Every structure is written in C-alpha cells, then in structure tokens.
Image (cartoon, rainbow, N blue to C red):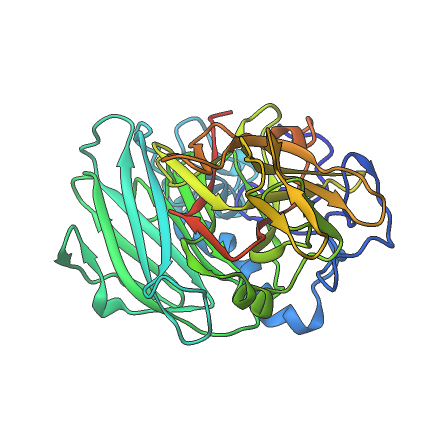
Length: 436
C-alpha cells in the first residue's frame, strides 16, 4: 500500500487535506510565494473557520457512504474477529454473545461494474448560487452484469430534486437519507440516472460522489467510485478530503465552460498576476482564471492519472488556452501546463502595446513566472490551427510527473487559463485512473 502518507488513510473514509504549501517546479517550498490573492497550495493543516460548515460536511461524505455500504471492515468493528465461516464466537475475542452475534454473509463474486458522474450547469454557464444543474450518473460494465446492484449518491452544497429523477428515461424514486440517495437496480444492467439540483451556497464546493454495492447493506464494488466537485464562480473553497484514485475510476474537476469574454472571467475569478503568457499570437499578458479546482489526491504507487473529457475517456477535450497543474506533496512543489503551437505568419500578429510583431514562425505559447523568470514546464503541446485546434486526446496527458512516486497524498490545483478575447473548456475535464 501507500508509503509516507501525509493524510492518515482509512479504508472506509476519505482523508482530510493537510498537504504543504507554495508553488513552483520541483523546488523547495517558499512560504513567500503568492498567486495574486489566490490561496497557496495547502494553506494549512486545519480547516479555515470561514469554510468550516461546508468543509466539515465534506469530511463526512466518505464516512456516510461507507456506513451505508456496510463494508466487511465495518462488520469486523461490530462483531469482532471473524471465523473463516464469517461468524463470531467467544474464542475470537468477540464482545458480543455467541448467540447474539449476527451472521456475516460473504460478498458475492465481484461485479465488473463502475460509475461515472457528469455535472453541468443547465444554462452552460458558470456555477453560481441558485443555479440549476443537471446531474447524470451512469452505471457501466466492463463485462455484462446480471446480479443486483445498489447505487449510492452523496451530495454537497446541492439540493437534489428527487421528483426529477429518471432511470433510463423512466421516473424513479430514490431512497433519501439526508444528502444521500440510494437506488436499487435489481438486474444490474447498464443504466443512466438523470436529475436536477440547485446550488446552495457560495461558501462551499459543489460535489457529487457515487458508489456501487452488491448487497443492500454492503459489499461495495471495488474501483466503482466516481465523482465531481467544483468551486462556485469567484470562490476559493477547497475540498478537505483526499481523493483516493485507487478507489475512483474518474473524478470530474471542471464542467463544460461555454465560450465567454475573457474580461468577464477576469472580473469573476481574477488574474494570475504571478504568471505571464507570451511567445504566441497575443500580447504578453497575465492569464485570466477561467476555472480552478484545488483538492488532495492520493494514488497507488505507479498508478497512472490522466486527463480526459469524459468518465469513459473515449474522445478528446479542448481548452482555450491552457490547463495549469500545480502540486505540493509537503516536500516538493511542481508545476506544468498544457500549451499550443502555431505555424506563424509574417505581418499578421502585431502587439500595439509593445510595438512588436508576434509569432512569425513556429511559435509555442509559454508561461513564465514573473518574479523569477522561470519558464513553466510544458506538459503537453497541441496545434492551435485546423479542425483539431487545441484538442487533447483522452488519456494522452498524464500528470504522473507532477506526483510523488511513493503515492503520498498531494495537494493538486488544476486551473484553466485564458489569454486574449474568449475562454472555454469543452466538453468537461476529468482525472481518470488506471487500475493499480
């Protein structure tokens, strides 16, 4: 399992974020690093007071999922050490009387099923308080499944509308317990659940997490989990839980972002004044924040974590202009970004502000750290021209080089940046994981 874990790992719970600070590219942490008012990575080991209500609720997400799922470890806690037949007795050190000890049924053979979550603003715009969003959760199979499955959902900073829920287009009534939904699928077949929800508050993250069980009260399907979490427009909330990519197939870290004037995003989200974009078809300038997500990530050592445009990772994704990835494992901070290149034209791209001709031939956009002059490392580079302009194939861009080899818990910030006139991200942005 993972070595040197910074956020204490529990089999049944996600982990609290307590992971480093600073920015940079494989350099020692510098506490003085800033992001033009943006919080440093891992701003501390405790939950900020102003974020406490939403953060504490998020800490309970995995606990709630696990408690409802009733995994084998939960059974051990209740009935003590188990015999090979799954029953407890006095010689096992059980605290329960033999005659009162419940029989723990063995889990069925693992079903090759998993989930995928997509959360989108219904209007295709930014996420704001009071907005209506559409949630789609798919139950998918590696190979056909015919046994019963139970889908579990947990919501944060969202009020889901149970009356809007449909399963493959047919109205379905979920079992609702607080923020948790449970939906039975007796035949275990592939299915798509859709419903609407309303964004509650500007103080916390919007989040949906999904899991599958093989019995009504337990036997969670391994690596069937998926989720989505976003910050409200202009917000700076971070998730205090650590996403274990050994258990999650996919995590949506940005929604579809409709093309919108860059000045609007600058007003809503701010500008990365610590960076300068240059060397391309636009005047040198600090890039605008189109979308940002910060969270803690943990993986199995050697597990590959990649970008994709969907939870099935079977197509492409496009960003105008960059995706910046910054990580901090408590010892080392790293950064890299996806960029684009242009063949260039003489006398076409001119910057009035500097009275210079831009991008005359073979130009690749650069991100430069303003204070040090350091060039941020390129993670991937695609063409800015033609029908596939700015498109990255799903799975082609890995962030492994930005994560510790040990698999230790790491604070990750993913930021969509734009320069020029308009910014967009389509169809969405996910992190997908390979099996350990």
